[in-house]
Amino acid sequence: MAATTHTVTNQVPPLVGYDVFTADRALAEAVERHLDPALLDEARADLSGLGRSAGSAQAQEWGIQANENPPKLRTHDRYGNRVDEVEFHPAWHRLLGKGVAAGLTAAWSRPGGHVRRAAGFVVWSQVEAGHGCPLSMTHAAVPALRADPPLAAEWEPRLTSLVYDRELRPAAQKAGVLFGMGMTEKQGGSDVRANTTEARPLAEDGAYELRGHKWFCSAPMSDGFLVLAQAPGGLTCFLVPRVLADGTRNVFLIQRLKDKLGNRSNASSEVEFDGTWARRVGEEGRGVRTIIEMVAATRLDCVLGSTSLMRQAVAQAIHHCAYREAFGGRLVDKPLMRNVLADLALESEAATTLALRLAAAYDDGGAQERAFLRLAVPAAKYWVTKRCTPLVAEASECLGGNGYVEESGMPRLLRESPLNSVWEGAGNVQALDVLRALQREPEALNAFLQEVGRGRGADHRLDGAIKDLLAELADLEGVEARARRLVERMALVLQGSLLVRYAPAEVADAFCASRLGGDWGAAFGTLPHTLDLASVVERARPAA
Image (spheres, rainbow, N blue to C red):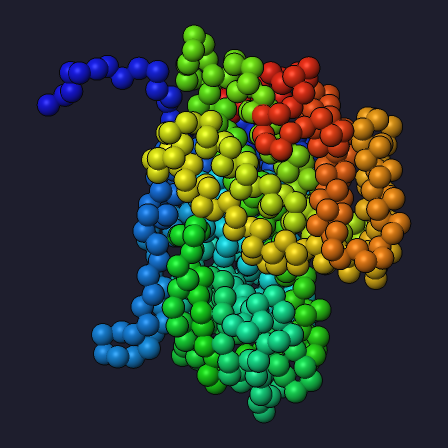
């Protein structure tokens, strides 16, 4: 029987049935800026198609289903045989299959691939973030495998395939494969040189037998894994196939799945190796150097993942406030709410602009761009991922009590928001990595400063911030205790330089006034009231 006590009014329609890519003007402009014009029409068509899928009711329902039905570990079959399989809800496979088909593991195999893939990753991750992990690991495995050209020739075509094949069988029989990674162990965490997993050489050249464990193994249902273990010559990188060439299962004992704060749809596991067959990647004793290219690529994906979460949170907040009325008018038109929304939009656009600039540097591939990435990636990973949680929390508050209710989708974004800051090296690890590059790789600092310097003269607040940063960089004595502050300033100055060159004047002005000029409070919504905040909000509004 229908309720007759009241009529529902002043409620916001769902943000559905729209193109997630074209509605994000900062992202669409970044793609246009960084891609060869000859690639633009095809790229826009592909990304817009993915954007329409991401904004569809069907895909959004898949995201809800995948999150509400987390993976299940099945260690044994009915007869007591170990099978070590992870079962996923069908929605998970649909999301992952769409991501593979959209080229989110294929950046290395096509022109402009990194920019196109980065934009697609930002778009598709807004549906549901958990399935992004195997997409990221598979994408990032390629540069590590290239340390062994014959191995890369064998595996790279499958890793960059647009075919999602979920069956566990020998990789040679599959049109497409997924990869995971296992580095950390119980006693070491980020200190991978404390690893104790042993690798014993076998008679076959390049083959080893592993015995040990991994405390965090990403995407345990994958076809292969890059892991670190102690060989006779020191810490070494290995490829561990899930299924051996003769069709038998490799020894890959999944002990349990992690019960995580967020990222519920994704399986993160603890695994044991006990006579596990592995193939060496690169030279013995150079495991960190071999796998570091994979780590760098996954760190960029952490930036992209946080960028995606922030964009979806901002889109939901502005959409809600554009329809919800209170105190005689729309929330979006209220000066104080407009200030909050504009502040959130600035943070999101700064992250998007920086993330796509990093992707473009990967596409360029030259020595100067590689040197730039050496500092810019850990600095961006530190800062953008740190900004994600407070932004999502503030965006949730824009929905009032509705934002605290699971059906709004905001709690899922909030639970997900700390993840990218923790994965692939938490904040201190990133800050220390920046210091290491500053002290050992002068070409990296030179490339970073050249990039920042391209914005000089456009805004006096940016010029002042660059001058202050140079003063800080001139004194690296005892710098570790202030490393976070230094890396934060590096990231902000880089974002400011990019925005004064590429963003509309009202966005660059507001960013420089608040983030670089000091006219900003300790919470979102404290921008100077004299700025053109209405234009900033309207630029970020999703047109549904």
